[in-house]
Length: 355
Image 1 (cartoon, rainbow, N blue to C red):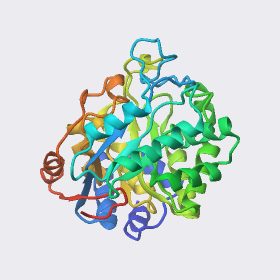
Image 2 (image 1 turned 45 degrees about the vertical axis):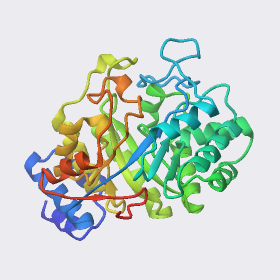
Image 3 (image 1 turned 30 degrees about the vertical axis):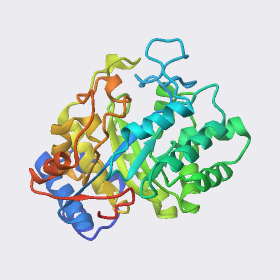
């Protein structure tokens, strides 16, 4: 254990075997090590931003078994699809002074072509002030745009960047293990393709985030291997700003029978993520998914970012039974979440420039 502690202090990469030892170690020891690593990389700072989401549709051609958000078609109860006019009105409704990011993700709509998604970027860019970064489309969405259009991922990303795309979110990674992936999202782009698209984005100067969906059918070993694949990609292209562990929510989906993992396992997983990713500066605790109380606890286990104000603009986790059914916090509330456990809250933009 002493050798592991020295590597953590020196910000050196831990091996798979070392991380598995830590995963099973005493919770208090794990917490202290993760907190030390967080302080090495970010001092006493915890970041937040002012943002809102656009989710153009939840009609989706993929059938991920963990998803409570998707609908089969426009006629199904709970389905929606936004027109360009809808999106325009929505931007005017949700934008408030001080917002620095709009986050656009949704579904893989069977009847939408690449030009639809490209037009959304241009439309949003024309409406919102230039200081608002457009973080849009998961690697899965990009892959489907390639399939439908016949364009390469590089061509797609260049065109989106030219219309105003600022960054890519980290969604769609789920869990990289191929056997688990076959069980939970068999018709989705592979882990290799996900990593490839993010690598292409990085080479084009488009920064991205990365995620891991955990707490369903996977085990600790599969989580650690997923995290290490992200770390390896970062060594090559150095374009990931943040890693976001996303806890599986079990309401209204085909995996509901699994239930949800215990709080301690969530905290252990956040700590392992922080300790494993010496080369990714930020670990985000997404409060609409975790709930405010658990989000605050993860700050003591390595997380240094709590996402943004949201402004009641996302349904992905609320439809899966998340505690925050109408997620919206003002900047001062986010600030107090960090300050109440002893951290120095810093408002940031999409690229972690302090505002």
